[in-house]
Image 1: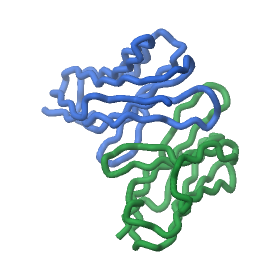
Image 2: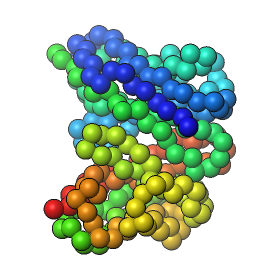
Image 3: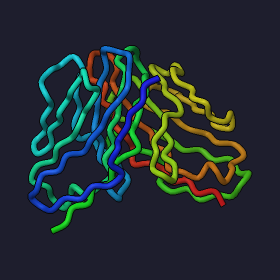
Image 4: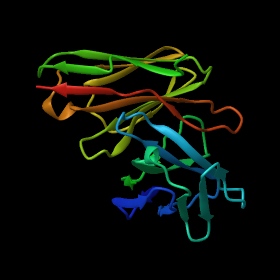
Length: 116
Length: 114
């Protein structure tokens, strides 16, 4: 079975600085997707970024980028120029590409606080 | 326009009652899900439906029954509610034909059983 591990329960960063959230996963599959979701206090789950396992290039979405190391099964999220609105819980998630209806497998989350 | 909506957003009820949570998506997706987020914020899949067919039925008590009347709706009915059912329940949807696979979440329903 696949597992996702986020080893940092809490992280903090100052405004305008850069922070990296870690995620490792375990799978025997070769075709899968990885995601980062943000959950602010409003509890809405917001998709931040996604990465296809077959792509070597790291995904980027504005201030958010990932470092995807397939062999090491590592998928970290870098937030550049941090803003107060980035404060939230961040979840790393894995999804098999094997069949339709496959669920996301989540890590336990990292709470990010941003100070001014 | 809300992409994935859930009603109600808050539900407070007593032990032993039966309740339903409704979910609708207007994204034209073919797959829908129910996730449970516990008090420690851990998210876990409960059910998934693809084109109204049950795909995932995780080990949840059979007091929980999903119903998908059509591809745009997935409801969750819970019988004989227990204290341990208190949690946030999220509905999500995705388009699994082609290679999209992102799941989009509803706002969640906070269920409190007293």
